[in-house]
Length: 634
Image 1: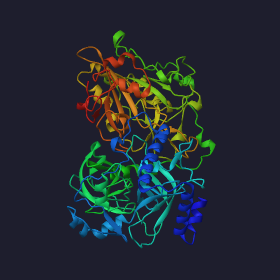
Image 2 (image 1 turned 180 degrees about the horizontal axis):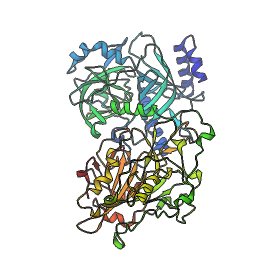
Image 3 (image 1 turned 90 degrees about the vertical axis):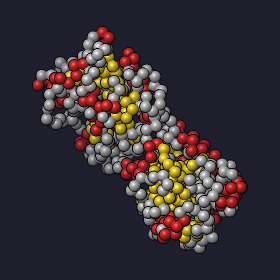
Image 4 (image 1 turned 30 degrees about the horizontal axis):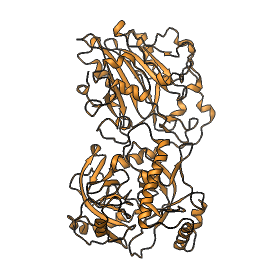
């Protein structure tokens, strides 16, 4: 930050910038235009590979084959107009040039707030892409742009990389950088990297920047884009002859690169259920992070991130970017609580005397038994239980097994008797369980003063059956933190919580009975809380699984069906279902798939799965969205 302050207060800011670049040139010979562009591409790829070892889960990369590329799509009718003195220079034919003329002032106002992502103290690169103001002090760009200048420390925090002759690179937004322009500079330093999307997520990142006069956030669209919609990509195309035809590139760009361009085109479609927009505007390397602007409203409809020469350019739809920004802003950052506020009195071990817990023979003996899953990869990470040699916490009609490292339930198992259920109108008081050590469970300190909810794994009503005392006790037992996993308050669980009802009401389910296993998907890449009192660094699961076992009324045999509550990443590599950031939906998957992602072993149950025994598959057979009873495959 000392370098930034000295630059900010320099009498001649431009001279300081030139001096900095000259110092870098003395260390490393300046690359040619072609070398600079290809060097940036290779460095970005190398950086992404390095970072992926730290932050990428075992999932297919969301970005796919178009990531980090920009492309010329059409040879005609797609001119990359200069912006000079903040004005669009309309020279060249375009289908809807009349729309640009009619909306010119509005479009220019939006384009003003798109900037070049410049680097100081980098040995070779002057800039690495484009970004634009989504809030007064927040710039959005691409993940593969931010990775170029960002490292991740041991705590999972983002840090600027080291610079040449500096303790770190200086990242700056330049909102001008126009061809033959005398417009006064509008520059803002980036103070921190707020967020870089994981590899299974769309290609975006957020930077904190100085709020400066003359730079305002761009308005974002409130309606989804449609094919044929006129748009323009505003950004800073660089020489990119290795991935585009050099002669065509020269004819379109006239040999002038690295300056702000306004490149009109049309939306031609979308993929991933509307998450990714496809368009035919002209782009090159350097356009990464460009704002894709609706020519009718001047609102941003997408964040450009890649393309394939003479095929299509791609952008993340703006509703996905906006949802990600909202979610990022809800991250916890509150002061420490007094120690006394985190002390909770656990339930005494003796109150659980006589609890039988989950019954594996609830559906029948022999071939109809449904034993709890084997712990597999988690066998050495189970919290010891004072009254059970197998470390199973037994409650009324259900049991749980606790992870001592994650302080959350690995598995919950409940017997449900739909015919004997009682409707109980009561709430419970959450408590720790005195049968396991306090350090192996997490209490109210995780949920205080934030937007996390206590998510029941065994839902409140499921064990509420039998005699009045049994039903009441079963429901009360669900209010132990050993049955709770933190979930964001906006989590969409409507179809998830109704799932057992759907299953029990199936005409083919005998006796309205079910044995249900539920738990979180615990991964090393789960996001960590920041600044949460007493639990800073606690990892919050993002997906959940459920396996329901019943007896088919006609065949008199077991059937076991599996489900995940996911916002997309968990099943991204096996479906064509859209990834909508922050929106969870319920999918039916294979039991073997749940085994694969959790490390648990469901034994014979995988053989009774109507979707089959393999974990592989394609959309329609391996993952089915569940929103009503008729969607179930039983």
